[in-house]
Length: 110
Length: 110
DNA sequence: ATAGTATTTAACCAATGGGTTAAATAAATA
DNA sequence: TATTTATTTAACCCATTGGTTAAATACTAT
Image (cartoon, rainbow over all chains, first blue to last red):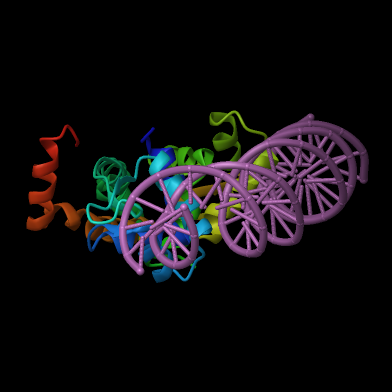
């Protein structure tokens, strides 16, 4: 459940992308994520479920308080997305493309 | 209109992601993209509009047949996505994260 | 035991998304 | 000029999404 389409679908929502940014600083509780996003607990809970079932994050109980759930980023989906992105980027690295791009820059593109 | 959220929203749909893959091989007509994706012309047209209004592709008339519209990838949104991804990836490059990850690999994670 | 806290699940609702078919545009061709 | 051809736009429909509030779960604290 961690293919590219799942990953991109999970990241499509701004709230969920924001959660990823928050988790870059380390694992966070559901409550912290909700507060930081000014979002109700149920709403955040569902976003977290989407991120989890699509493989972007993983859940565990807080060691100090088993009521709380702590979420952290998983590496693989981001790595895979990076691989795909590099493939796409290769388009511009390609000589022919570079030539076309150059020709077009003269017409005010970028 | 080419921020990260727009880009990710545009890429969330599998058909649109497929279009990006097709355009990696060079510019393509709307009709070609529709056929390659086994999708009706109107449906593809709307996907192309989403990709265009969100800044991922650009449109021009075919030089040889002005009825046809040719689409090509734009660089910026993918570059920006790459920048963000690298920031996210930095999470795992971080020493402390690396340590945690190592500790957890002993419990069967990855 | 009782009450409080952290979070999820359920039920519901309005908005969005993606497909379809039919009509509109606009250019090439006969 | 009349007819195809390439594509978009419009109108419509159904499924999905993301939010809300209320209830359920499960643990902590008094």
